[in-house]
Length: 365
Image (cartoon, rainbow, N blue to C red):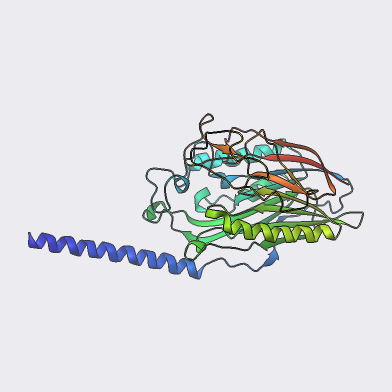
């Protein structure tokens, strides 16, 4: 009996030391490889456009968080369903077949539409979770003469989640905001957003940024297009508040210069005056979502969205059309000198991502 107890404690001690060593290695590697971009840097150029002059005044846009090809309709994502420590039977990553199906959905959308600007979020270019498929190069191959840029916001050599199941780990993650435009910008910058999680969480989270593209107009003014993806998993919205303040100062400065400003993306917040449970009143399943403050900007700035079509669904379970909670957190913002001619959410029944595209047509005044 005594030898059994001694063996038990020795085994426990060895396992505990192995766990501590594993955590130490993960934190050391993560800290040493932590992506720390400067406040401003050039976006990575994938391909260029031959069109350098914007002669027309009417333009069409799409904003879509494509969910890195791994958050299609059948995905119940463990990080939303349980904790970062273990998966409890939920999927950590989808099958390669499902990822290819989701990516093909985005490629088909690009083939079937003829918009001037595509603002995509969560585009993987070299990640284990999406089988190392360079999704942005595939998008660029569909739009062969579109300027294509990547603003990196996820560059992690090894993500250990779920922490207690290293054989299922996320692993390498590399991707970000992918923007495709019919026209060649004179500038494409990655702007680092303020605010971050505490160590060690921050070394495994996205480094949120804005993808800014600047286009000269024949009038001498500029069209400034911003691809947005604000923080998620931000309890209390403290990081979002810092990010939205930075964003506000940026766009007001551009508008003061006389420029046209159009921003679109996944804000991880509802538009002002849009109740988060509008589309499913009383059926939020414990889910909530903050709003962008109504008084953030002067009233002649316009938040543009389709209130009748959900853009985001909960991922704590595979998608169920009747019961999965849905809301609107993907939309556009336009400056007062931009007239909105049309806005439409695209209902794909969440086949390819946990988000759905939003389309907009505008006229520069």
